[in-house]
Amino acid sequence: MMVQDSVLFITGASRGLGLAFAEEALRRGAKKVYSGVRHPTDATKPGITQVKLDVTDRASIAEAVKQCGDTTLLVNNAGIARLTSSTLDPSMIEAAREIFETNYFGMIAVSQAFSPVLTRNGGGAIINVLSDATWYARPMLAAYSASKSAVGASPTRCVSNFAVTTRQCSVCT
Image 1: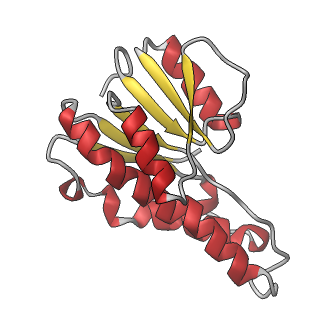
Image 2 (image 1 turned 180 degrees about the vertical axis):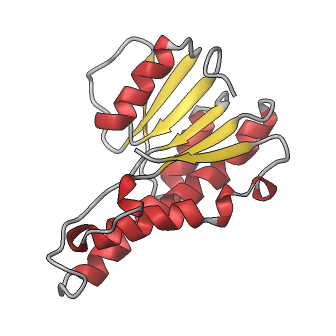
């Protein structure tokens, strides 16, 4: 799938890597870039349209899909991390639940919601952004590492779970 002339929807694109993906997509000739953000601001970047999105909220996802029905390329970049002292830290289970809701279940929910849109628009692709933390889990980032590893091992990576013309891949950063 070429970025040129595509319409991208990038989750978690208010700053950092997500914003860098959005800017690079424009440099590569994307027709339009939607930036899925939890808290839209008045700050604007030419060619990038902020769309309110909380990947843990089905209603928010549905509204984003409704607003961005011309999407041809979905980039699941949204993610959070919480530091814990170790896997035995008393806060570990709550932190892991919050992280998995965003990094794993949020990715699945957004992919499921946008899959019919991509099919309607000729196929498209889904890119899941992973992390090098999947290769070496550090105790203070154990839940984050596990969530990103789960995305990499997820059945949603299989094309058969989406429309035949929709391709999906994962990238590590």
